[in-house]
Length: 259
Length: 273
Image 1 (cartoon, each protein chain N blue to C red):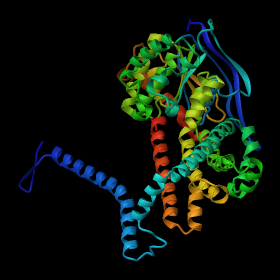
Image 2: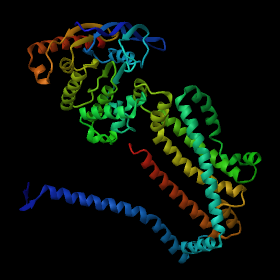
Image 3: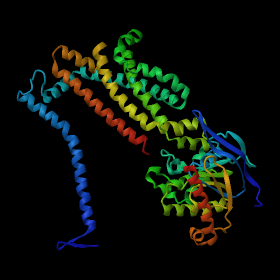
Image 4: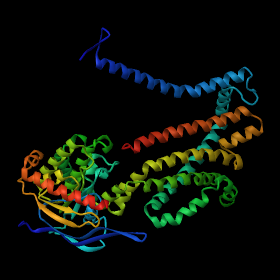
C-alpha cells in the first residue's frame, strides 16, 4: 500500500486484573493502517477485539504499548465510534442523535444543521428526523449511529460490530449503504466483526486474531475491486477460498479456547 | 380476498375490522369501570347510611358531607384551611424535591460523594419525620415553616434514592457515547445524566407527592392551628364528623389530582419512553 500510515499501533497489551487472576485481553498488538484503508478485525468472541477498539476510542487505557492516529488539523476529532446496537441515545431525537458529536464540539448552528441534514439524507432518515429512536427498527437505529459518526467527520472511524444484532437482509442492505458512504469520504476505518462474509465484503485487509490472549495471527488482503456487492463476493471463487481459510482458523481458535 | 365458509362469504379485512371494533368497545368498558368504581362506593355508602346499615353518627351520608362542604366553603373557613395546607405541601414538596434531585445526581455521578452520603441517608431514612417534629419545632418554631420542613424531610428520601438509582441505571454504552464524542462535564450532566435519570427520578417524585400528603395531615394534627389536618383533628374532637369527612375527602381528592398532574407531566417531559 503506497498510502501514508494513518494509524500506527505499537505493541499494545491490555491485562484485566481481578482478585488474584488476570486475563490478558490483547497481547503485543502491532498494526499499521494506511490512510483510507478499511480494515476488518475478525476473531472468535472473547478474543479482545472490542478491547483493542475501546483503547483506540480512548475508552480504555492500555496496560502497555502505544498507538497514534495521524492528524494534520485541529479541527477534526481523532476518532468516532459506531457502537453496537444500543449506542443510540433514547432521549434524543434521530436528528439530535446524528448531531450529537457536532453539538458536543459546539460548532456553529448552521454548520451542524447542514452536516446533520446531509447525513440524515444519506442514510434515508430525513423523514424520521423528529422521531425518538424507540419508534424505529434496529436497522434504522444503526443508520443513526453510522450517520452520527460520519457527520462528526473524524480522522478515523471505529466500528464495533455495528450490524451484529440485525437480521440477515437488513445487514446486507446496511453493509452496502456503509460502503457507499465510505467510498465518498474515504475515511480510514477499523471495523470489528465476527462475520467472515461481512469482512470479505467490506475490507481491504482482514486481520485475524486468536483468543486469550488476543494476538494478531494473520493478515489477509482482499483484492476484490470496488464498488463491491454481496453477490460479487458470493460469486467470486477466490473469496470462497478465503472464506474457508478464515473459517478454518476461527474453528481452530474456538476449539483451542474450549480446552 | 374472499373465502367461503359454511356457505357464507367472509372478507378477512371485515373480520379483522370487527375484531378491532370489539377491542375498542372493551377498552372503553375498562375506562368506564375506572370512573364507575368511586361513584359506586359513594352510592353504596349513601344507601347504607340512609338505611341505617351504617351508623349515621359515625358515617354521615356523602350527600350530607357535600352540603357541609358547601357550608364550610361559603363561610370562608374551609378555604383558609385548604390554602394553608396547599401552601405547606407545595413549599415542603419543592424544598424536598430540589435538594433531593441535586444531591441524588451528585451521588449518582461521583462515587466518593455516593459512598460518603449513602450511610447518612440510610441512617436517617427509617426515622419518621413526624417523630422528629418536636425537634423540628424546637429548631424552626411552631409556624408554617416547621410543617414545610417536616414535609420536605419526608419527600427528600424517595426522591434522592430514586435519582441515584436513575443515574446508576443509565446504560453504560450511553456514557461511552458521551465520552467518545467528547461531551464536556456540563454537556454530560445536562444531556446524558439528567435526562437519563429522569424516568426513575419521576417515580421518586410521584412517591414523594404521596408522602407529602400523608405527612401534612399528621403534622397539622399534631402541631398546628390551621390546615386540613387541623380541621380533621378538631372536628373529630368536637364530634363534628361531617366536617371531619370533608377534610378526609379533600385529602383524597388532592392526592388524586396531584397524581394525575404528575403523570401528565411525565408524559410531557419523557416522551421518548
